[in-house]
Length: 172
Ligand code: SF4
Image (cartoon, rainbow, N blue to C red; front, side, top):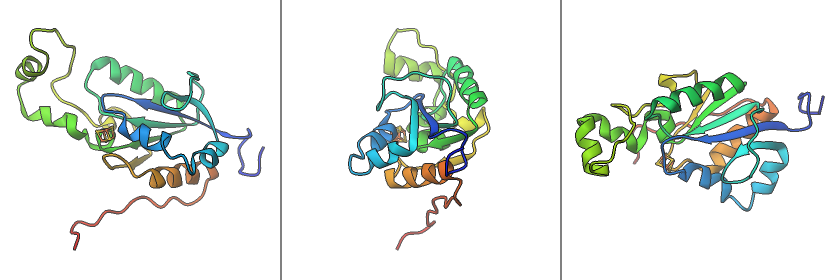
């Protein structure tokens, strides 16, 4: 067991994207000044923007993007089953994000407008991930604030008290 109380040297982490622009993952990957320090604490098992590893054993799953297809539901549930802690990050994952704008419109009309005659497998609505699985922590933002994600992930990894973001209702 290491000095952080884990039975392995580093906490294992995966980041998974669903329907989204992947801007939140990029925020983390582009954090060059603190990325080495952040990665030193973590064993990256699956994080497309950072690593070529595609491993299915991880402790923390970061999930980005909204759910818009049935196959995404099954994939999300498998990720949840594997992860000890699941973090929704980005407004798409937390609330449905930009993709949820289509929820106000007829599905067939949306498909015709965007894809023409092409057949597209999509749900009627875009969903936040908590519609399908239990979410342990949510970090909204479009994109997320990378310092905030790093701070929260490090707190989870080190089992320190977590200070979740608070946003004012009104800003002066
Ligand atoms: Fe992209 Fe914004 Fe969704 Fe992040 S929350 S994946 S930046 S659209």
